[in-house]
Image (cartoon, rainbow, N blue to C red):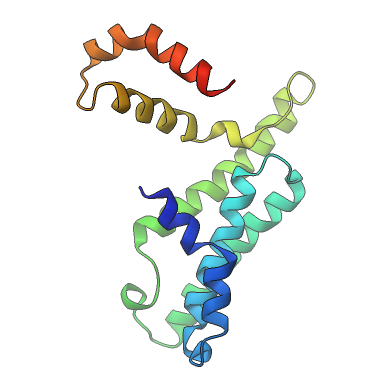
Length: 161
């Protein structure tokens, strides 16, 4: 994964450049996809966005995908050419369903004991730990990992100071 490429794809400057293009009428999907998906991703990672707004951005993503697929079907356009991959659509569905499930679990079981912080339910922390391990030993084994746990804890604590 290239975080810089993802940041560029979903950036306001990139979307603005497509909107200002003389061919923007032909680029409507290229404009809409990053805007809708980027809004949903921003909501998922935001530590300040209200849960209601985050849910609305995810539902907007879900409705956009449903409407786009319905349009492609009614216009007899092949989805394999005019939409993102089936795997990406499945991931989007899993994210939406997962967040809604997280809200229900929180409401029904955890509301009185803990705050809901959905950004902690992502793989970002694991990715950071594995990135730190790769900086110490590029091709590590499980045994290497066990030996470097204490060094890794110090490294991550120093990064957070």
